Image (tube, rainbow, N blue to C red; front, side, top):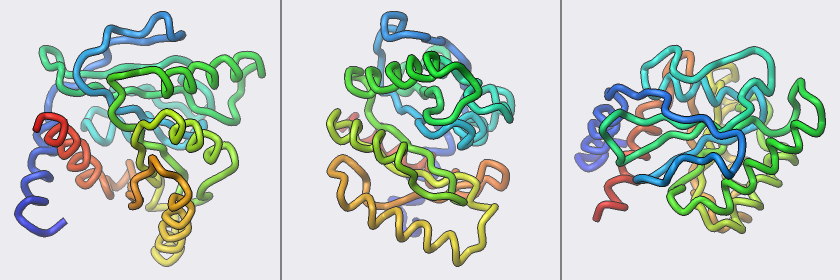
Amino acid sequence: MTDKSDDKLIEAGRKLFARDWQFIWASPSIQTLPPMAGLEVAFAGRSNVGKSSLINALTGRNALARTSHTPGRTQELIFFEVPGKTDLRLVDMPGYGYAKAPKSQVASWTELIHKFLLGRASLARVYVLIDARHGLKEVDLEVLKTLDRSAVSYQIVLTKADQVKASELQSRIAETEAALAKHPAAFPNVLATSSRSSTGMESLRAAMAKLLEERAS
């Protein structure tokens, strides 16, 4: 991002996430979702891909979203927003794929994820997090197919980008973008991020500021 319009979005994104983000709701089922208000953006990804760490890095709040070294700790849809503001909500989704939990429980979380993606009118975008060290897996592709069917726009965000060499990261971005060409609801460009070094956070914040701007116009 280099031109004046991009600089404006970067500043809007900075202000958006400099606010006092707080936990507001946890939903273990579709029946317990909070009433819809404003726009919602959700973060999806395999267990232990770094969703909670990314949310903490975005908001500058180290303990806002609970992080764990144990895959599968997030078992509900977790909602965050700024008190008194209804323009944007963040949703931390249960990790899909491997988790240290009974198979029936993992199946229940997976069903919750798919129902939420297909039936939430206020859901404006889904950021699908992919570990930069490993790239897209079969379980990720199944979620992308669900998103294509739901017609919710989504974008791939590579996490842990600081843990791969620059040349490998560029190859990962290229192969991921090539795979996205087959998915009609996907943004064509991939964002590379690191929660530890804050790489890519500026661009991700700006993307959400742009989404709000577009929906308001």
